Amino acid sequence: MLVEPRSGLLAAWGNALLAGLVSPDEAALAIVGEDAVHRVDGLPGEAGPVGLTLALGRLRGLGATGFRVALPVPGHPLGLSGPPDFNARALEAEEAVVAYGVPYGLVPEVTEAGPAGDLHVEVVWRVLPVREAPPADVPSLGEAERELAEALRDATAVLSRLDVAGSGPVAEAAMDAYRARAERGRDLLAPGYPPRAVRVLEMAQRVGLLVSVAYENGHGGAVSASEIAARGEALRPVERVARRAQVAAYNAYVEGGEVRR
Image (cartoon, rainbow, N blue to C red):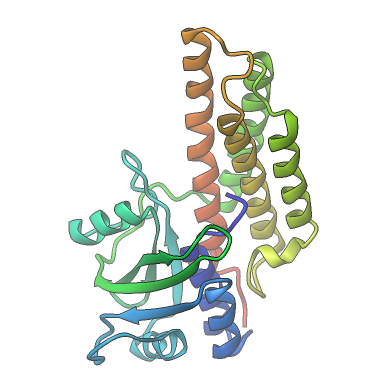
């Protein structure tokens, strides 16, 4: 969770574009990031895939006033509102973007080629109809911040007791990467997002790091089946809280109207 999901980048920079804070080219460049190319397929009025700049402009012309994120996993349709076909595709991708003001959503399909360390990544965003309804289980920024503080405290206590809170070279490398990321502060979100959204996203990534390090470091001191089960029980709700907080941060524009022109 140290790297923003592609849906988060598209929603955040798309919102900044709609707010007039960045140019279309700036938004597209930030969304693509280190990928080779992003295309958008299925836009009304277009016979085939188009580039991000054209796609964002077309969605704005159709009436889009904002973008929100969905980060669903099996058993937790976080941010989804239907219909079933869109939900199924978003669940398979474990992420999606839903436009606010028009009944369309975008689901990324990622293609990778090449060796590790030199991947060529192409992304096609499929535009699909969505149901205009409240998204599932999305907290406010305030709720997310409180949940994260509690989750971080509880998970640290449990994982420390089980000796899996994180140690050794893998954990140290992960923490170094996290600290380097945190030093960039506001780069976590696009221009215009409120400080509270930046803070919530940064904390969500910190909690996500704790979870990933705990998983990647093996069983640590949790040598018995009951201790391993206890670790899993401690991590699952923490993962859920972190994903909810990510969605709350990215959705601050449409949920709270906190990005201003």
